[in-house]
Length: 216
Image (cartoon, rainbow, N blue to C red; front, side, top):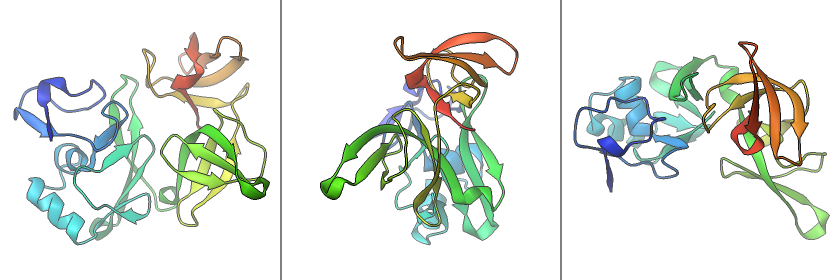
């Protein structure tokens, strides 16, 4: 199923004018971009859908270390795309204007990504499973809380460390009216489910915790 170009989310960095339809992401429209849009329309590494499908068929495109299987595959914030023939890697970020952007990263960075913890579950044997916003789940026994961030080692498929949601931590606002803003937490207001953030420009904003991702 396709999506009318005029109805694409404002987060998508593509022109409003052009073909009537564009490919629909396989997951959340507002929180991801289809790999086809990224390779053809943003990075311009392919001229058409056929070329993208061919590259995918040859397993030349990796997403977080695993081969992409479909041109509709959703790329979410902080996901890592590798183009094997070019020996280049990219990460999906978000601009100050709240639009998705593709950033080229080095070979060391490509093995790691950050994801928000959205749930915890106790399994048999008293093992703790943490559920991440990107859909991944990991067994993790060290202290962590919902709304902290996990640094994932994509190569070893494990959590490298936890970035707690607390004062003086650097954050990125991933959605809402302040999407794209980077700053530092000045105060965590748990009862209000908000954090007070000082932006890079020196402005102080109150942002809902659900819109915030700890990045450092």
